[in-house]
Image (cartoon, rainbow, N blue to C red):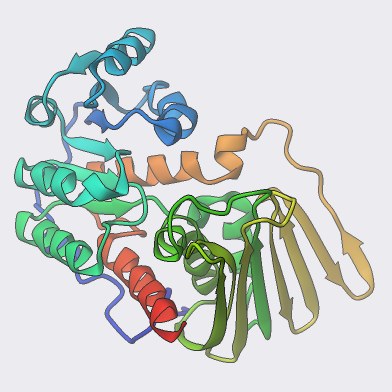
Length: 331
């Protein structure tokens, strides 16, 4: 079996083992879920999935914006909570979609309240805070999962299965006009982190940073990032332009006997023996499923039900965040 993604340094795949997570028997009742933060990502990606409660019960939500909370909760017919601790007391697990700056305090409070947590990437605003949250989850014997949704995109999962000892892999993710308003560090953690995490996960095995560039404007805002890594025998390149005039994402891989390309997480191209294969995008597959959000939510809930570590655990998130710090250190 090929090794799991462990960039930067050789570490155990999960320092949270199944034995270290609270070993309660799987309950016959449905997990009770809550949401913290009702911004764009929660409304566009997570509420449409979580509101389709089948294996779980969506209890309610909390956000400092009381008017927004009441309006959204009324629409989804769930309880509007006025305090985080009140929500935690009614839940088995909570999805955190608040600002990155709030992650440390919100996730800490939830873990201390005894609930499992799914949180948007990055895990925390600083590496020190992220490490503290991983340690707290271990102490509390709770599941901590970070929302790297691309690892659950069906086309990317299929591509990973096909990449047996790839020679090279390149991932690009560009923006029409996404310069600023925050600084280079914020953009790397907020957006480029997806590219680095996905590319190194696809390549498999340990990865070393070879070189790269970070171009910024006079205001210290990211314009362009490109980096080169070595993962076993695979050369890995990541690239992002913040003002490319196009909102495109693609992955290209070269292997022995085959070329692969995935565009926009759903369009597959495969070249073998001079033949090009371009299967149609499944008509039944929703955009949220194509982009991995459905798979990520279901994976987390399964981990909660079965008391098993999540694939994109806090420890996995630490590896990616440490790599971003390395990129900053070399700039």
